[in-house]
Amino acid sequence: MHDLLLTDAHLLDPGTGLDLKGGIAFSEGGVSVIGPHLDPASARETRSVGGAFVVPGLIDLHAHVYRDATPLSVDADLLLRRSGTTTSVDPGSAGAGNIKGLFTLVAPATTARILAFVNIGHAGIMAAGRACEMPEAEDLRLLNVDACARAVQRHAPGTVGVKVRVGRSSTGILGSAPLHMAIRAAELAGGRDRFVPVMVHIGAEMPPSIEEILAPLRPGDILTHCCTPKGNALIAPDGRLRDAAREAKARGVVFDIAHGQGSFGFDMARRMLELELIPDVISSDVHTGCVDGPAHDVLVTMSKMMALGLSLPEVVRRATATPAAAIGRPDLGRLVHGGVGDATVLALRDGPVTFVDSIGHRLHAERQLTVLGAVVGGRWIDAGPDASSGPPR
Image 1 (cartoon, rainbow, N blue to C red):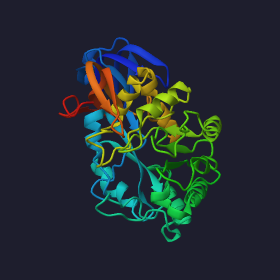
Image 2: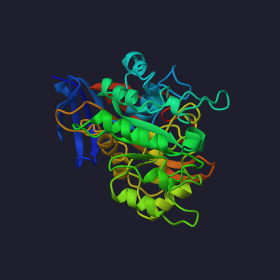
Image 3: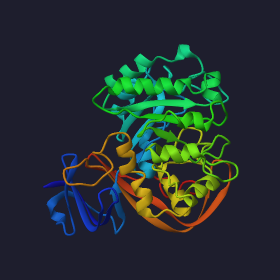
Image 4: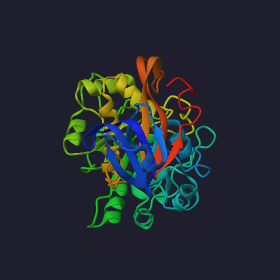
């Protein structure tokens, strides 16, 4: 007897090639059966999803979710109910000095799965906008390579990498030096046994230049905010793709959208698609400054990329299988027999919608993705009241 069965579903998992109309059952926290004809009487709880898409549980590779502990963070369960994000990966809200609480206090009290990058800055991101500007990585006294490496090791598998924000506002006159320290911490954390990625944020202002940020990145490292509309961008002002960006992509650097409050521009994303430089990962960079717009959540960012021309399978892959691979968690982001029992139920809603990017530009579209519910560890989670009736999505 299965615990939960979803019927009348369009099962879509671009990562495994699954594209099937039928049902999916969950037992003991995992996927137990996938097939075209499943008996509703074979489960304790059966739900028809009315022809909606059932995709792997969405993964937001960049969501600040160390709630009640760091100023920027929001509730991962809010994102789960609102967008079907079953796994939120916190991008360095905490450093070695305070990462423990994320896994001992917040994660156990949260239905959604929480993973995290450890900030090379010992205290993580403690700034609170204009209310309180606190240094993060602009002073060497704030950085401890060994402590960061130990924190990644100690809190694995919850910790998936090292984060560094590089730019004038976060690293000051140190330029790219904290990036090199973050890479060293990742190397120490992984040792000879595994690759630990570094996620690097592109600062709005130099130093360092985008070329200095890209140059040391290894295959598998993650460049986040790849569609930033600010000056230190992958695309030059004349519309040309910078050579350093092309070289980084060719050697396997992962390009992550991370929309955020100020890091996603429609014109930049459109130009990247024109140049066939499609971002590898779609993420939200959701935090207190943008959870009610313009970022909202990863599902809204997926809808924006569809409005720019990507297909449904393309956006689903970039919020499931690709981020799972980027953090070394191939068990996540896919629908397979015996796999992790996470899934997101999505519908394409027709009707005019206006999307807004991080600099106030508008994009009109005729459809958007909306969430109908999710499954986490084999348990059904209802969509929240704002999943389809909140701010324009």
